[in-house]
Length: 459
Image (tube, rainbow, N blue to C red; front, side, top):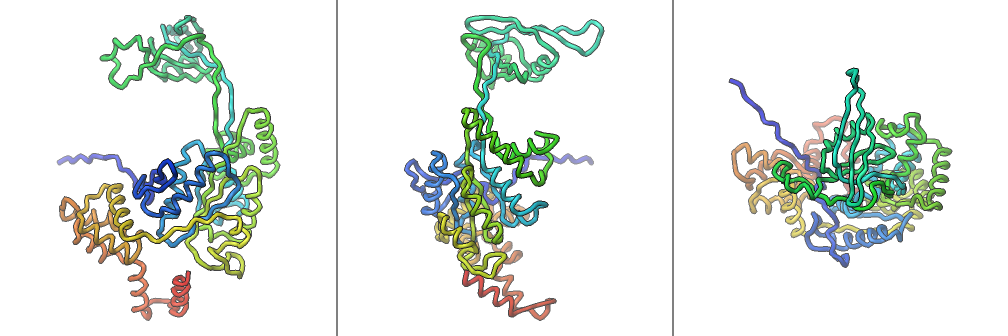
């Protein structure tokens, strides 16, 4: 007996995949529940003010710290800021611990992260041919070789012209499946062909073309036009292209290695020339460093200096530490950061979620993970989130859905949540288990464990 397995599309659901934005209205006031964001009204409004200044170009080279307990939405706010900024503004995200695992110096890793977060909008003027295709004629070689030549007739509402075609343009036209009555553009420099749609004059061919066909008006005026094209690239991408023999392909080779300071100086000088000539403009972006307390004193000193640069991006950091030692020193400081860096930092505080907020977040995550769950199970998960942690409760959602599917239930019930709660322990129960059975474990150090637990409570 042959069995067929249908492979369906699997969509990965991340911890913050439900975040669409900060959920603010036009006056930057936080909505109660909007764009995946719940609670943290003051923090969201503060982040919105920062974003507004970034968009208006009024802020650069500033540092913002999002500080709060674990599980209070610090990373969610940073992700929401990235969503609000859109694709045009560079946004680089990294965990501080990554700095120590790369095969380059710490300062080089931070420099690359900074330059990834600074965009350069380069304005170029190119010449294009834009019009409606009247006829395409392709001639094959008489000797049977693969060489092709031909002609294309194009028109606007005011004129009609015939252009000679070479092998490259013929291949580009065939790739785009261009035919008569299509509206196209041809870049005269690169030879790139872009199909804009069908001419409105061909609406009678509706049945043949299909309902999804895009109809466009036939262009007016000259066929050949000058068009301004804007390319946005990061400073780091320009660094890589100019420091490697393979040029542009180096961007796809993974680890780019260290880049010489001389190369960066030359690039900064060239970019400054472009800015003076009006060919380019800077687009300061955002660098988000999570777990910033994991950086050491050398990294913090570098950040202090780098923020004074004219082309520094907005530095957003997140930390869940209280008073703790600065890594690499014996000095204790708030959030594990030097006082001089904290002094130049705008600090956004996050607060513990209320029970109502926890219930709303559980409901949102059930929707995001496509899990049907009855109200009693959601109430139980909310209680679990309140007594243990929100992260633990969220991780129970999919596991509970799998348990419910095993008993062929249409939705997750309380018994499924209880079953998962018994199978997977939270941090508190795990710690209690270790305390109760400490004698049966190897290399146990109870005193250090108690001291560590007390320190966590103090934080």
